[in-house]
Length: 216
Image 1 (cartoon, one colour):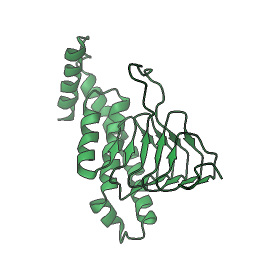
Image 2: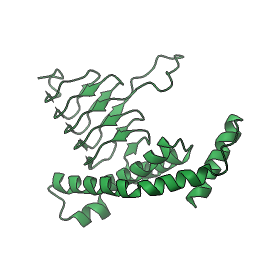
Image 3: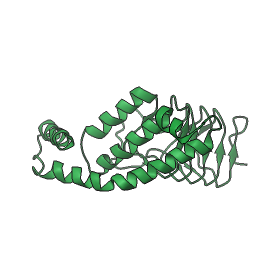
């Protein structure tokens, strides 16, 4: 089924762009490549589940996290969609991401790079943009936006340019915070408080609050 869906997506891309269709064996090649990555994806997801269990005092068991936490569905979908995105599969990664968005309220673009032990607590309203890079052991709360700065009207974006922020390892971002821009980096171990608006980088170990959004 996956081979067929990838083939249809590739055919659509060729039709839409009037380009040369991909090699007929390409869908199967991509599918086999994805299947070979399943053990690594599973290992990442296992760490995500443990991060959720250890990071939420309300979690009663690992099984409860797996079966009932919306962030696990969103992250599972993302980790698979991201591999298809890296293989330049058209359409399908975005469809997968939007299906997870509909189910969970968590919007993760399949292009985002996310490290291990990633946890989104509650999750509703979280947005993670295409060129976002997230390190290991990062925790987000509901309503966090990792987005891009708006372009001036009529100004085209640069293909391949970084538009979204970087979060280094061990960062925590509380509810409602907004961090924008491809040059914005949140240093390792930083904590960003609720409702903070950031378009500038902060050094490792920073504590940023709504009352004062300058690095401490």
